[in-house]
Length: 253
Length: 356
Image 1 (cartoon, rainbow over the protein chains, first blue to last red):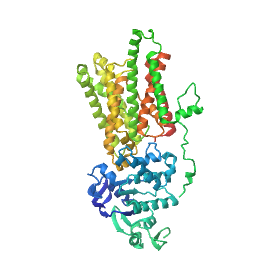
Image 2 (cartoon, one colour):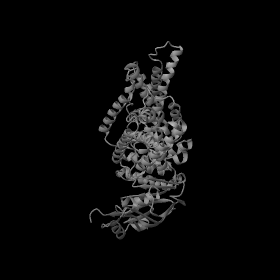
Image 3 (cartoon, rainbow over the protein chains, first blue to last red):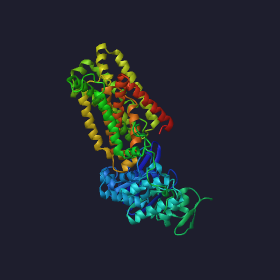
């Protein structure tokens, strides 16, 4: 379970987040939605201990993200940011193998290699494993990063806009894979998505935020209403019955 | 699900990196290509080049008869130069590669950011404030330790502050580094003007080293530092691989990023102070050998780049020294020429790739 207790974050004079009190139960896919600047990514990076909160306490699976040993946390919690630029030149397999670092400390055992193979297979990257990252398309690279995060074999996986820069086909397959990771590997997946319909189609829970606070928490069926969505996104949104899940329509008010 | 691009061959189709010219085997010869494909054979080739240059320096144009006592005396005196070159090559190469890793870009080098200017200003202020007597009186380990400690403290405070800030913008860093370097340089020059001639003499012996005039007394200390720092860096090679992914990914993988960056910057400061104290400042040498290494190795795996950069640096410096000393009789010009070529490569690289 992920718990946030009275978490506040400000950048200078700008109030970015909080106070937030939130509990995200273990298991399943949780989507953070909201307009730009709502504090979704800020909250995710604070939970992922990449950013320190001004006040408040965050625990993931019982571990305090600030005071716990980094190595213990890295076996429990993995986070992937949307921008991943680095100068290091690595093959896909080398990158995914680095995901095993919390377990192997660089000395890869057969067990680690197996986990790397599993992660590569899960993201359909086995054919590309020998390629360098700079030889891949944006979508393939994104999959390689997600494979690295899965190879870390953490119970909790946080993803900041994993659908960024993915076209329709790759966005759908990415969400289907994350759904499978939750269902088959028993992971707790928390992700920021911009497209509310993706959240409705794949998530078990939706956390809707505006202006740095959590406004609504519920199942897609509970959140996907005209009133709530219009309120959250400050845009007239109509909700229609789609195939399998409700569909938000907002393109032309 | 099929990827559109997965139909293309998976084999590595990159063109091989630049190859050292060989008189007997043409670059297009298939035997040559097979020989240079694997990392191990490339490393062995570069190491062989270094070894050949070292042997050349030791025995080429030795006026005494081979095997005679005079012959070995000359070899011994030249061995000091070879040792100095090896220490310097190790320091510059390793320092630059790990510096690139922790700063997350391949344009900055410790020297461009004024690490060696910092060394000069510390040396000068030691003489300036404490007098030459204090510097000459305590010799050996104590002095080396105190100097290194000062250098480490200053470098960690200054560059640690620069690199661990959240707004570590590359342009800002370059600017600050260049300004700091110039500032330190001017400060040293100013203090040197105020010294008495004898103090200045003692100081210049320390500041303006060159390979030909390097003191034999420094060599064991330099070699010892190299061994110790090398062991520490080698133990941390996997951590460095993770640090190279940037602060956020490294944190997610359980590495204390800020601490690792600070530790690495301290190691860089130690290596650069050893190198600068032995042969004086070298601004672009590290940059050139690191670039060559990245080309030769392909991946950024530190278990591969670190040995390769030592080999490349040794081969480059030994080769240059051999050619300049024994072919052109211009040993004093070695650092000038290396800096000229290195600076040109640096400029070309900057113009082609831009500030990335």
